[in-house]
Image (cartoon, rainbow, N blue to C red):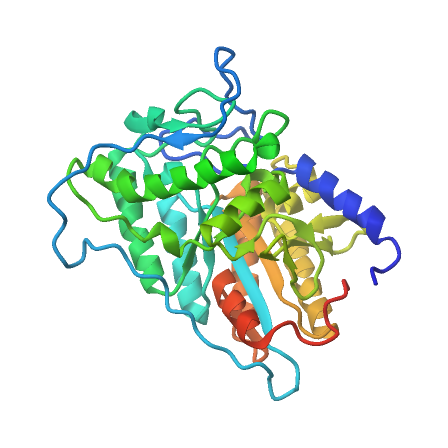
Length: 395
């Protein structure tokens, strides 16, 4: 049974997700975001009507095949196993940290180092253009937009190859790569009206960017950083999209979970054939404001997504950290359902959200009942043990 007021809260969650859309930081060389970002305005060509699908042209094959060795694509990360019950009789309290975009190289280094310090595994939802050189952008043909359109820019030869290396290293460390789709089109002219066929083509375009982007950037055969078939989850741009439509495309592709929808701190269920791993409704510490466990939404709740004076950063960070701690305590009080925390590769609002998340991860992931895992590690645990009995009601 859903507790009283859940319908109103659900409506508020949807509104919050729409108002506080999560824009990715543009790639190096792309226009910088303003100091008061809003939901990105899609780039739309008036000379192109709606297309039936989006696509990515397949470039001519490049030979020779790279020899065995460090240039081979990385294997899927090793999935750790966890007990069904702790000595307390409760299941482990899984904390799942994930990032959208996954482009900035310095932040890749930061989060890999944080994870290593506390034996955490994280999920990185990669945007396809981060691995595709901009001089080939016209290969991408999204619906309702001109060929090559992207609201987050494109890569260039040097950063595509650098990301290829970093992705291999991160996967070897046990981190998971998901997809954040490609052009990041949000709002009324964005992904909300895409059909299953268009989503199928969007996912195929992502796969092709992963497979061929490094080769195009290098001008010679370079194996992709990972096999796109190992990508089993997605977070949609701005948390938008017709969920039955894109989830059908995901199921047909063999994917296992969706991390896009707003939700509650509760044990996950399958919806439309996929595990639903939500960004969760929490209360901003010290207020009665509902928000989601995503950095942009926290920023929107705190300052309307405006940059506050730097002198306010310590207090804002403390509020975010207290919000995370409250959410963890709420999980513990209700049978340890997973806690899902979303972030971007950013330094928004004087790095308040990245700094608060760093502190929370470092103080939480070593606690005896906590396991900081990737989404796919949680999928594997759920597949083995199932949802703990009687613990799926929203809290």
